[in-house]
Amino acid sequence: MHPLEPDRTEMERIAGLVTDRAIGFVDSLDERPASHDQVDEDLLRQVAAPPSEQPGSLEMLLDRLDEAAGCALETAGGGYFGYIPGGGVFSSAVAELYARAVNRFGGMAAFAPPLVALEQGVIRWLAAACGLPAASGGLLTTGGSMANLSAVVAARHAGLGEDLIGGRLYVTAQAHHSVTKAARIAGLPAAAVRVVPSTAQLRMDVEAAAAMIAADRTAGHRPFLLVGSAGTTDTGTIDPLPGLADLAAREGLWLHVDGAYGGLFTLTDRGRTRLRGIERADSITLDPHKSLFLPYGTGALLVRDPNRLAAAHQGGAHYLQDLAPDRDVADFAGLGVELSREVRGLRVWLPLQLHGVAAFRAALDEKLDLARTAYEALAAEPALEVLAEPELTVVGFRLRDGDDTANRRLLERINASRRVFLSSTSVHGRVVLRLCVLSHRSHAEHVDEAVRIVRDALV
Image (spheres, rainbow, N blue to C red):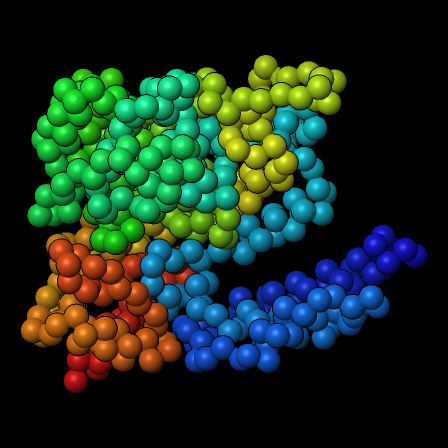
């Protein structure tokens, strides 16, 4: 038996050991601390060591991996309320094991037409969930950053062509930093990114955006892209999407909506109402590894007109001349940055097919309810100043009478419990603590415990 080609018995042994560890890890999440105490320097050296010429023991290697996975923020646990949680449903991990084992090439339809069609079906379902027309398309990405990059490139190509001089795109200070990063990677200078003032509620000021666009045109610049947020990372705020859609249509701009965090709340009645206008976007970024609870590395870019995305990303080579394109199935390599890519659709398709959409909708509704519960409980504390009512599932708060240093110390005391983990941001120049409810494993008991720990930390 060649070591790289194990027989069935050996494959079953390997898979059994790994799945047993993985199941044990997931099964113990409620008992695991929400954050690690300190990093073990010896462990860092061990995992970074080069491989040996001789084979190792799988059991010993898994022991080391268990140590490494335990020395981390417990992003898969119900007590994780920091940043934007991503829970990771177990069925998606199973789908990923299957996908990696069969190892099909997903960049071009000719290699595995049904599996690429499966992924295309996932994209069409996501587009329909956001209200985009049936002819919409897109692709799954590694995350919102890559999706935002391809959106900026497509908008740049559609609006500026080959001449980038004078191009201007419009964001707020609350927009995800990956948009500005994408503009730089796309060859646009820093001056091309125009930061539109926000209202007191941290939403893009549509009138200010219109005035900036008009002034830029007068100055000889070329506005081409308007970026709105369907739930900012900092505060969960939703930009006035209908107003932005009207402005983009009037000015002939590409409208991109970054819905990496909040876009899939359109699956709920409340979310659909609050996100009204997202269906008018030219492109939408989603992160199923956030609001569909899937494992990290699962993003999506949706576009109203796939031809405009293809125009900005198409490429070819002589060595691919034997592969006839399928008119009914997309070649994802021609819609994004990557040629070599796995079949990504399985990690989304299997959980949706196995559990049903209703299960995900109910979980999202639960998160909206839990955020409201947290907001009301924290707002009842006289020592705390709570930001606006959550539009989605981010609750921001700070000490009413404390300075930034006091608020940082409050966060340290909360996280020192190691039962929950919160993070902070800056709003109007002041430190604000954030509690974001988004893991499918976060339930009422976890939010109640978080509120209790916050109260105890006030003493």
